[in-house]
Image (cartoon, rainbow, N blue to C red; front, top):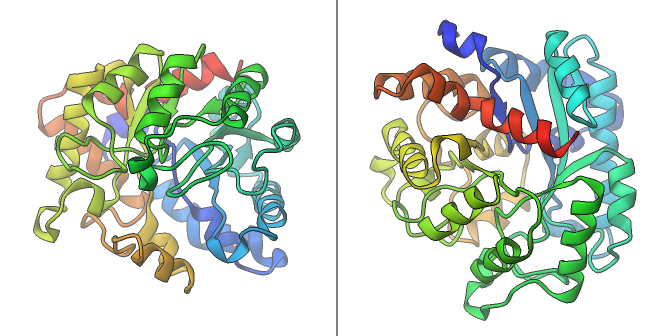
Length: 342
């Protein structure tokens, strides 16, 4: 990593599923495996602020979902404690700023859907006590709270429990994540939200018509809340043909979101699935294939966080001002967390 701007800026990644890979190891290896396998990549990529989602594989559903949720949360605490010279698990904006001032990577815990909680909205307070500060209420399918984007044909908004979950998250100061939420659910959230929301890993549907991407109206809606849309790097969500799954295509998505939502509402949500899949075995991989995507397809050079400086370099090469690039690669997310996690 040689780009001076990339080194100076706060670089934020709002979606890296590395907890899936780390927690798959025996607990005694959690801290050391993170240090050996993932920490070097985060350092090479210049990551300063890393959101760690807790995602529950189908193999744990339904009975083991809460147990696996707690196990992955514990994994995050253990890897942070075992690498305290390099990372810090942060609970609020002050924690994040102190970590950055100390030269540490600020880690923020997230939930990618809530299968361990389901309609028990009172447990959102429990996971908040354990450190969760960002959360989504659906993945691809149906939950007791809302439908994921794979169920768009239902036209369903949030359930009554989903509305209660949104209100509880706003009360507690958990940032609401609309990525993976069905179209009607996104509209419902944007209608009800009283605080800014985030899309932790969503690209532009105008450039790739996939249900996991956000339409221009949705992009404008997130921006209208004061929130941030963090662009997904996952290659099949950027383009349909493998030949088009390139850095230039990713930059097209970023520039499109900037043009629609405004540069102050754009961030990076890479979703480095290939790197995680390299550390895991089925059924995770088979499950992803059944959803019509290949988890090992990646933008060349962006298989993992070490490639993040390529994005900064690409944006600068396209003529974006330094100030705007700094916002996109992390400044906007840092600002949003400063506002919502105060």
